[in-house]
Image (cartoon, rainbow, N blue to C red; front, top):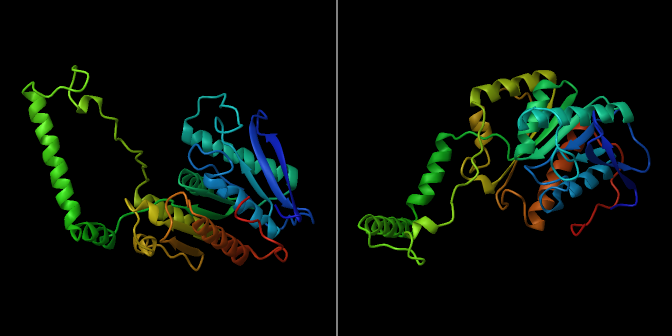
Length: 307
């Protein structure tokens, strides 16, 4: 951590049940600048995958922004909720409490939200509802397939003859096992069931997006309010995003009026595992924040990748 900043842990919220950490420059806070809140990615606590949220917070604080990272209810060091709100509604309520805490204690009245995956979704949904939000960074946020997406997705697979051969062999082997089980000749190693009876489940997490038209209308609302929008996509979500300009192609009917910045990280997976990918993401976020909201002060030594 740079010597020019300090970090402070605290409990906050309606029941003092949420745990957060604020990173701020030691030189003092400029309350005319928006505060930044980094949200949880799924159930990963406030440090983020591969400590990415820590790195983002410290680099942004180097530029003079106050940055808060916190754990949503039931994640990390925050207590479970005490009401009957759904997981999605509870997340939005937790964000409200974080915003109000900084507003009350730091006298900041404008905010930027940012997050990966579910953190991106929650940033967007909060921005739609809360006019105090003036900027959002959505990392692997909502994505919608386009004609070019399908050309790239299926074209790449059609060109891989060996993949098709392997697929055919696997399907044939599976059909053979099913037939043998049906005829009563296929027993597992314990003599009680078929091989497939003991296979590990292969279900994958399925992420659901709102209808495209609903999200397009939401973006129009944000642009009308003057919200700065930063979309970041990785190559690790090729199931629904596989080329740089897919976002532009998906929302051709939305006039972003110069308030949209798009970054595509073709060499990164979904959680930005490599140090090179992390550095590229952090650099992009800091550059966007400074460009959109103005540098608060000159940058000092940035945090090393090993922190």
